[in-house]
Image: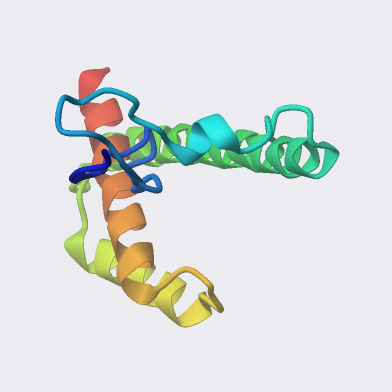
Length: 127
């Protein structure tokens, strides 16, 4: 008979619907086996295409930011100006936070851009 509840997490970290399994761990079911295939759904495909297009725009924007920062660092180096300016980084985060209209939370925005700033600095240091 059906025993304890079996639960697992998918690739995105979301908990999948649980199913009951018997005590000898046979017949484990998941909703992914019972739901219809989403790859053929035209609405799902359209959203995925839009998301992929957006991901490319994000990648392009990050690469452009690195290129601009590289030019700024070259200029600062020639002028004898410090590369890192904590006040400017604080200003960027405050400016973006005030400009954000959601649905991204303020905490999410600060987390993302803190990572972007750190990655850009690391990319600059690697050259």
